[in-house]
Structure formats: C-alpha cells, structure tokens
Amino acid sequence: MQRFRQVLNARYDIKVEEATLEGLQRKEVWEHPLDALREAVVNALVHRDYTHPADIQIRLEEDGLQVWSPGELPPPLRPEDLRGPHCSVPRNPLLAQAFHFAGLIKRWGTGTTRIIELSRSHGLPEPEFQNQQGGFLVMFAKSPLHAGASPGNGAERTADQSGAVCEGAGCIADKEYRQLTGVSKRTASGELSELTGKGIFTKIGCQRGRGTVYRAPIGHIGQ
Image (cartoon, rainbow, N blue to C red):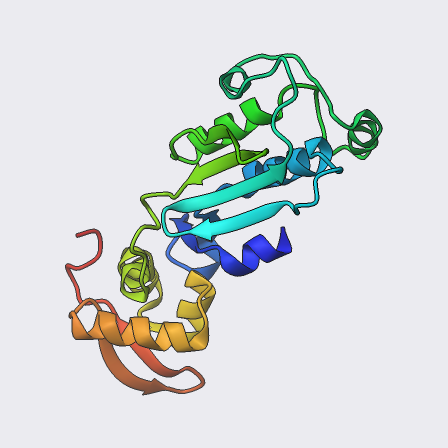
C-alpha cells in the first residue's frame, strides 16, 4: 500500500468552510481507490496457487492497473460469478483463516463485490475479472478525472479555492498555497506562475514575513 501511494496520482478535493486556512478541509482522491486495491492484493495473496512458479504481478498501465495472481479460479467458480453473491472456495484455507483473524478478510465470498462497490463509489467503471494465462486477473480502469493530468490541471482545480482564501485574507503566499494544495515547493511555483500568467492571480511583491504574495482579481472568484 505504501508503494501504491508512491506511484499513483492523487488530486485534492478542497471544501472551504470559511475564507481562512483553518476553514479548509482537504481530501485526497487517488486515481484508483486504495481500499479496492488492498482488497485485490489480499485476495491475490490468499487465493493464489503457491505451487505455481510465477509471482503475483501488479502492472500500472496508461489506461489502468492490473493485479494478476498464479492459479485460475477453482471450480465451480467462474469470473462472472464474482460480480454478485457467490460461494467461497478458498484454495489455501489455513491462510484464509489467518487473514480473517487478522481482520483483513471481513466476510467470506465478498471480496470481489466489495471491489466493485468501492470502484463505483469512486466514479469508476466496474473492474474486470478474468482467468488469464494460468492465473486470475483483476483489471481496474483509470479514472477520467486523472486522465491527462498535468500541473496545469492541478492549478486550475485549486484556483477558486485559493481565490476564496484571497478574498477572506487579502492574499495568499507560496507557503499557504502549498498547505492548501499539498503540492511540492517546485510544483507550487510553477502553478502560481501559470495562474499569474492567465490573470487568475496578480503577483503583488513582498510583504513582511510572507515573501511574494498573490491576490485574486475582484470578480474572478466563483467564475
């Protein structure tokens, strides 16, 4: 899960309760729902065929993410059965029991339906389940909200939230912008330059203790 956080993109949904930094609520939204990925990895570990010489393989592609584990579904299960209530046929019952006692498996036979529900709530298409090349494959589609993501897109997403802070506090500094967006200092500098170039912010020089600050022109906020 730590590795997923290192390689996946995230955007920030920012709710402005009031026009101050204290009045901001930030929520990370990952390009794939982390709970669904955790469920897929747990299933791969518990249900894989350990007599098969291959490893569990996780691939991050342009259009999504794939989790492949050795060993096709044991009969009588078929991939289409996993989209609804189905019986549990653990290939490794002692391992499944250990994961259950550890709290990593909530209920038998519900892992794939939980993956589907989490993907739906994330605004994604339902994942696909396949028997493929002697193993079982889970394919997660990429969120359209992250397709073609760029620093410029991040700047546009945070412009109105930053503008709301400007309206209440008069202006926003580089450090405050980074606290608001969660981006690095280098990314913040690039986004602020882009927003200034588009006329969304006005650079107004230095103020004591704050360095360079930016103001949103009157009439921009909420447009």
